[in-house]
Structure formats: structure tokens, C-alpha cells
Length: 507
Image 1 (cartoon, rainbow, N blue to C red):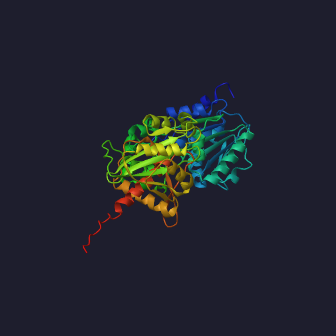
Image 2: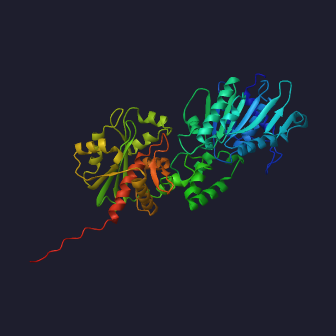
């Protein structure tokens, strides 16, 4: 090709296309700044993989189809017998993306259309013939075997964040292996996956050579109807692409009113956040937790319950303090000092969140590569030295090492061991939810708890019992577990009958 950059040629080609359907049908395609930015990044020299995450309805499919068609027609590539693969979760979704390409073709000049053959049987293909062809575009689903043996020059992974894990990983591996045969390029365009552990999230979170990353995701912990974050997740709104701001605000209000899975889906799709789509898998939704935060904290009065969650050798440990009579809650986390909070935040893909927690006195560091258990327990008890500690509640699985440390720290309060399985865990999950739903938990603004509850998930058995689970590899949910233990035990204390005074009997 000429000395013009591929990104420039790609943008020029897209702008020659006409909108095939909708209210703007027949008008030239216009690229919004975020779309120009993605093309510049994904088609830069040395880039093999371009990953884009943006809210639903922001022109992802249109952009993918336009770039797929440009590669097919050789708008910036002179490779012989080019092969373009559009991959999606299911064959039906792959066909939808394929139909976008076919729609664009109908707007091309007739002499170009004459060189194109569209096939729907036995599989969805589009063929373009020239002196270096034939060139083929195919739609495939998340079945790795369907891509084996291919040698694509361009692969588009549509809505990668919602592919099934096993089949999705197999297809992705097959595509990347095929692309390497011809120095091809992969474009991964999707709304956010539901967790940090999903492969699409890892593409966005981990810096790697040859990978361009662009993510339009708002800061965690914000209300669902926060206008600035809605615009962050929907950068096309300002340019007439996708839903208008008025519609987004109306949808946010409806999702907040309905709550549950409707609110989770709104956060996952239009807000482009990493949350579980099904509310049954959520311990407490972030929106329900935000209702617990208040500037008017009740006093520390009456018995205090301490919930402990001892982290692994190098992870966070957390302690929650709950006063059942006044409904006050406090929670503090502790990390080992090595690696530092800034480096740990980058590794966990939360930026400077841990540093902010430390500045807000919600998070402390102790020890080197591990948190020393005895010293940590001593600090936990020191925070409650003036309180009437009714009991300490902790995970039975950690009873050996934690029990020894509690004894060495000089604790005199009774210790209650709770399981995290379906028996104890289901009861504790339900008591925590009831207390929070009833507005019986009051806390100051806490980044630590916001992050923990936005990450905490539960597993469901066939009887619909829930138990807490660390369902996200980088999610620090220790504070949520400690809070669940403290609040659940406090709820049990309130339901126990008060001890009756003994009777005097005269002889």
C-alpha cells in the first residue's frame, strides 16, 4: 500500500460508508472522537490486538462491521486472499454482526457490489474478488473448533466479555494462533465482563506488548444515576451515537426503582461496570450498601461484636465492629507492606484505590510480605479497648492459626466460630441482607466497604441457599466477609430473649 498509515486509511474508508438503516439512513458514517482514538491505537505500528470496552449501544457493532468490510475490500491491506472472521458468543449473534456488514455493502457503489458475493448457505460468508483474491469474510460462534485451520488477517471478537469461559477461551486461542500465521490483527470489542477474572477484563487490565487497550468504565462506587459516569460509559451520547442522556437518566431511574437483577443489568451494560448480571449471585448490591452510608453516625453504645476475616499469606485481612443496639458499623483492612499499596493497586486493577483507603484511615499496612497475625489481633483489640466487646466472630476454617493468635493477644471475650458453607453461610448471608434492607446498618462513607460489596458474590445451591464465595480473583472481599460475620451475630443477639432475674424463696 501507499505510505499512508493504516489507521488513516481505515478512518478514510469508514467515512466513505453510508448509514444503512435507522433515523440516519443514507447519511455518511461519522466517527466520534473515541472511535477515532480506538482506530488510531489499534492500527498503530506494532499493535496486534486492540481491545475496546464501552457501554451498550455505543456503535460497537457498526464500527466492527465497517472495519471488517474495509479489510475485506483491502482499504488498507494488500494481502492476498484475505480472511476475516467475526466471532460471537452464539451463531445467531455472529450472524447479527455479519448482517451489519451486508447492510453496509448495499450502500457501496454498484461496480464494487458487482465483485461481492453474499452467501447464507451452507454458512454465512461474504466473498470479494479482485486480482489478489478471493477474499472471504465469515461469521463463527464460540466453538473453538470452528476456527481451527483458519489463517485470518483480521479477527473481530464481538462482545468478548460475555462469551462462555471454556468455549470462549478455546475460540480465542484458535483465533490468535491463526492470526500469527499471517501477522493478522485481533479487535476485541465488548461491554464489560462481569468480573475482573474474566479473560476480557484481563486484556484491559494487563499491559502487554503489542496490545492497545481502551476502556470507558466509570469509577466504582458511584450511584447508578450519576450523570458524569453515565457519560463516561457512553462516550457516543454527545455525538448522537446510542442512547441520549435523557434516555440514560430515565433508564437509570427505572433500574433504581426496580432494583435486583434489573439494576445489576443496568450497571453491567449501559454503565459498563463489572458486576454480576444475575442478582442471585450478589451478596449485597452496591446501591443497597450506599443507602447504609450516613454522615449522622449513631454512638458507640451497648455491646460490640467484632467480625474477623483473616486473609491468605499475602492478602488483605479485615475487622468489622458492629454495635447492634445503635446499628453503628466500622470496618478496617490491613495489607502487608510488601508490595506497596500503589503497586498492589496496579496489580489488582484498582489504580490508586488502596492508597486512597489508607489516606482515609480505612486501610493500614503491617508486616513485610505477610500480615503478622498476633500483632494484627492486638491492633484489632486496641481499637475496641474502651468498648464492651460481647464476642469475636471468625471463620471456622481459620480457627487453628487465628485461635492461637487471639489467645496470645490476651483476648477475654468469647470467640464464636462460623462456617462459610451452606449451613452457617446461608444464615449469615440472609441476616446481613435483612439488616441492610431494613436500614439497620449505619456506616460512614467507606471506600473499603464499597469496593468489597461491589466484588462480593455468593454461590447458590439447588435449594436456593447462598454461601459467600471469592468469585473474583482480584476482588478484595475480606471486609464484606468480616462485616457479614459481625452483623449476623449482632442480629442473633437482638433476637435472643433477655435473661430473667432469679426468684427469691423464703424458707
